[in-house]
Length: 260
Image (cartoon, rainbow, N blue to C red; front, side):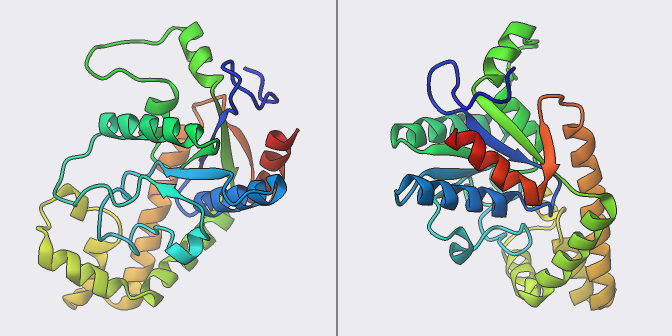
């Protein structure tokens, strides 16, 4: 696959996929790229973002899943957020069907689809057209054909810097009043739900019950995020088609790629 070609075999712009561990800046980069492409092309909207985050699909889980606010989106259309209630089933198959539909709609509007997220199974299933009803192994030509429609950029951070970012983000969640969001979710849903068992919510709930202090909750969440980041990196590092680069370099590289 030639990473330097911005057009797919069908003549359309290749879909941009921005991946990386939690807290690496994927969503912010996607928004920055969309805004810059719009500026350079002299249009109001040049790209639209599809979240590939298995937590952002849940309604009501906003602060705890670090969804971008309306202000942070800066007018860039976002999809894949707030799709189901935490007690509703949503599978990787559902995500692929949803994402393919949105990609078709975005392209029909003449915009660039940007997939941004850290759920590796979501990304791989979409990019490589996984089949889940049968045991199907895509052969090399199929894999190359699917990849030619996408360009995958991974955000690289030195591990010490990423850990620092995760601690900072953990403090920010409490500044945004994650306690109120946790209380609202606990009142509405059972802690037996899978959606309620991960992310920061169980930790905050323990704090609210007096089991741990606020500072302990912040640090526990940062540790959990770090463990998640390591799992995500292990998944993504197996894919040789991902082009890794620091966050500060990624925007310029992507803009140059699509403006050549």
